[in-house]
Length: 501
Image (cartoon, rainbow, N blue to C red; front, side, top):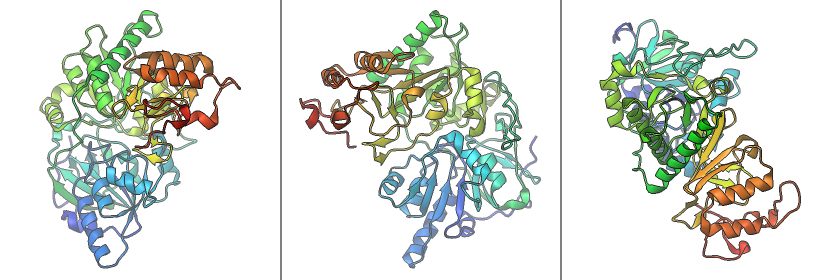
């Protein structure tokens, strides 16, 4: 068991004092995975310090590294203070997004599975400070993490100095839930010995160098993720279509009788989709091997629909997190949290035969997917881990409503304005209208299948009209490709505006 924390072991300071250690231009790596386990106090004080310095005519901005998106107390608060100069690898802040699109903040969008190898190689530069949340810490540097892991083991090991937010909201009974395992860099990299979703291969505690801990800040603030919207009819229908498709694959023998692990992206649609699968009595019990878990997964665990779940973070509402903590004895048997280096590792995803279910902004007729940039230029959040799974999973599914903006914009377009997932990495597309199985199809057949199975009926004539161009293996009329994206009341392909927000 972990040795109890003592104020004599490390310097216990206020958030303001901890923030004062950080200097302009330094690289700060923060822990957490979305709002799960994200830091909550020191970054607020850092933002206040930045505002004060700006009022005094002094420059103050930091290079900010994270595992994915963060709590609003990190990205949103620091962006409001204009305290971020650089950010990787994914974000979810409305204000930070605006600053990125206005070129006020440099942002490098990258696959989550690439983040840790780049850190280890030194390509992202040295880390001056690591700030992360812990439920407990011992004098010899053993750390009990909280609800999100992400890249914390790597950033804590590489950082020159460490600030720990010791959060009493997360109980010490969490010990045993985590599976901390780091890979050596090439050429010493070994295989990842996970052969079942429930396999544990590492340590329940993270080891750090206690000499690098310069501050401990006490807090008891719970995770505060954005609220999820209730399931709507479109999301429910998409979920039903996915369930029916997977059941047909099982019946055809392409999925084993005991099924394969599932992965699902984050957001309202994904949460609703998994809710449908967890409540469909015809759908067999299944495992989750995913980067994040949302609310409906835990309804599935508690009713026996989800047998076991592996993740890097618990992107759940406060009520669900409280339920988990109140029943940790049971959840220790059904849940494991891993570093994202493992949760998103291509080797494990492929070995386990994970079925990936991710979302899309738009899908084109050839099977390319845009997940990140509206109109090809305006960043939304980033690619996250969707590419890690779509490229390596046994069955790659992209799910999206057929239209956006109350039907004014088709999510099925002739050609994506930005491509995150190429036609070579996608297999199955699902909307509320049906399932397009593109496996083994040539481009022309892919296009017709997508239109017939997934496009909104009001847009099908426009999309079929685009296929009249028949030159080349992939018949794309580039001059017209981006004119068929929007308002359905328009009748000419050349006058339909592209999606703009």
